[in-house]
Figure 1 (tube, rainbow over the protein chains, first blue to last red):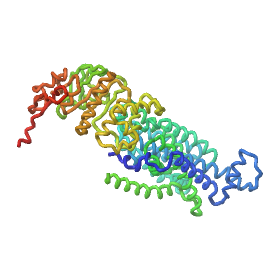
Figure 2: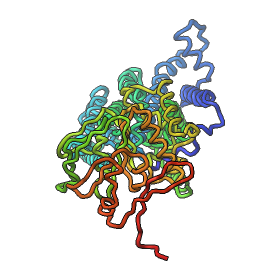
Figure 3: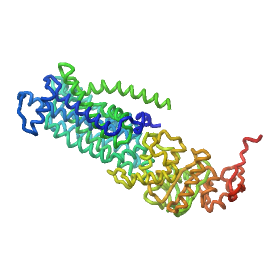
Length: 352
Length: 251
């Protein structure tokens, strides 16, 4: 029995709220999260002032704020908010799509070796003294190489089945994790080691408009592709045999999904480091709200993922004097939530 | 129209079946009978294009309305959404079903008498109800060939009757070639025109159901005595059926 069956709890038809009300609530949450992230931080800015500063870009306004406020909002916070929202949405959407394709809610983008691969690429770039574009390119390329390796190794006699893919993903992930450790061991403890460690822990603190411009095309293209394939992913979630019997080229479609995920993951890891658990936890919450149908699940996951990372990022830079790495918080929240979900699912399954 | 031409399938080195040929026209029903492990499912899957043939060839439309022996994925989709997935192939990589697809799905549910299920969650249906819904999905594909692997295996008597009625109704409409496997020769006798008996890996016989399901053939097929009987029932034509003489429960 697939775990997915019990993950969704009540069926969508039994929702008390109409569809538009749910959509509105999710959008409201996203707006609140974005505004919170915009205003909170070492330097607090009142929400109406933050909104006025943003609006002054598109409409003429009398400026009753300081140049400092304006710079913080427009040059520091705005790109950071957009980058966090973009990565959160992308990671959540790729998790939701992968869980559909694998019919297993325990699957996350990490499983295909993409994030460990991208982490290795980034760490290599840092230890070689590269930063900026070179770092992003290396993370992206290594993520793609990891995916290609998983694809090649999992393919036996012209076909790659699910179990083989997952296990190969774990193997390749372990390989790249070991390579990252090796780089850390070899790295200069005074300069590149801390840089690698902090980058791996994940953060949006280096967000700029330029970085946003680098990450956005990859994430948006991947998300768009998954959205267009939403009905296909539903059919794939029936399982390989049923989907093939319905006349679909299952393997090609699955690889298209993986390619989209690699694109999203590579771009996100490159600009924000390794931010885990989003693709695992957020789709669970989304499934509780709208069920398994990707047509509803993808947009809701995107909105919830964006809100989640925005709130986590706000927490990261306001909870303590120094900024807490993002990946630490997502793991601290994600692991217990996931454990609770797992137990709840299992109990439901036994109660059936 | 669906068929095989000198077809054979292997598992590893072992031949599951060899040299099977038939051609099934629209408006006809072929039943496949054989003991457990004789390769009925392999044959069905080969016809559905899910198992490659090691010899011969398969003549089939591009999509088959296939219903597997398992009762479908355990995912809480609406029944209507499950049935509409039958339309997937025609929708393209980036397509999503529209009003016409939903109508086709509802028509298919109507035909199998499960219109009331449309809004219910598929994973909460019983095994028998799922089988009926999956038959609707097979019909919704629009394929001119239906290939069903033991469609009655999870059904109670009333639902068996319903399934057989649906199959004869679909047959009467004349647009589908229907092939199903079964362990119940009664089902074959009641609806199929032709039958294929899988007697051994390289031995089978195929022909008109009433002739091929003889007492001798069935006794040989299953290894226990089987009788063909004709029952009279008030106001109905005499019904031919099959009675296995089980050794177990002598009083």
